[in-house]
Image (cartoon, rainbow, N blue to C red; front, top):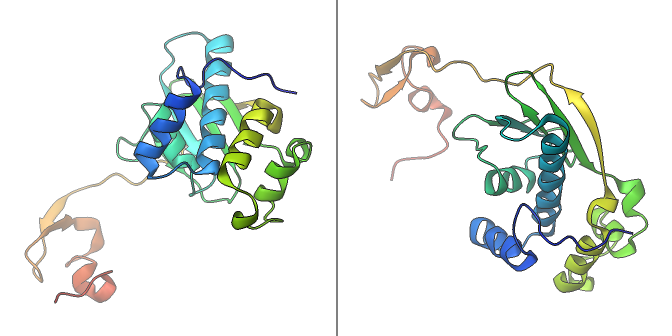
Length: 197
């Protein structure tokens, strides 16, 4: 079984949990696991590839993992160093952006089965009200890296978005928008997520 680590992402357990709560709004169990995954991937890179690697990240789920990467690495959605592929897998890869090699870490359900509270929570076999957060967090920390797996990977597709291209002023609303959208912006074409009140 995993022994309690002195630090996670260079922080004490209390500081680690505080950073999660400050960023995410509450101590989400998936984000705690995500932080442990980031910590493991960073250590694998440091130990096997050296210090000072310019790392990018790809996460394979939309929930919790992107926040873990944004809290504990310089990779964000906004700076483009974090990519999200919505495969619904609780996995992430940190890799050297120059040589496209790194490490993929994932939550391994077969290993998590050794920790019944953690397994039952992840597999949704128990309701949130029947498994208090403090008990679940202790199960997560007890499992630690023993519920994770990792592999060295070479990145084939970095999922880079299209370049922004030119900007123009929309004839419909008068706002700046990407020219690739056509002669008017998406909102004026009827694809808006809002309605003016």
